[in-house]
Image (cartoon, rainbow, N blue to C red):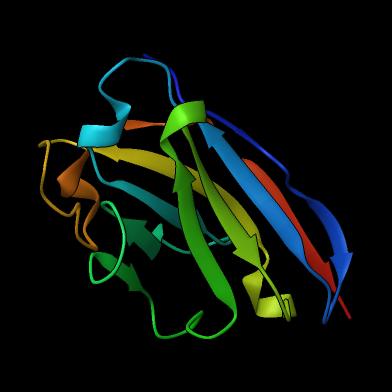
Length: 125
């Protein structure tokens, strides 16, 4: 199973991007999905996760109020809407599928077993 991310690119500070992640398989809706990011020279960090809907949606403090994670189970796709982007949001963004069905994936990489290849997001001044 390969997750396929898209939607990255170059944007000016204050702009918006929407990332998409297509998840093959018929059991997509049973699993939480997460977004992580890795900036140059840094470890990969948690951004957001979603199981089904509130209250099972979580964000890193650094993106709260600016990013929104959502999912369309009919399309097997999870999204990350990123608004008010800042240069410090520059990173490779990865989507990931939780390892266990029916539970939140959490903020640790160990909670996820399948990852996408990553999509670059660059925010310029």
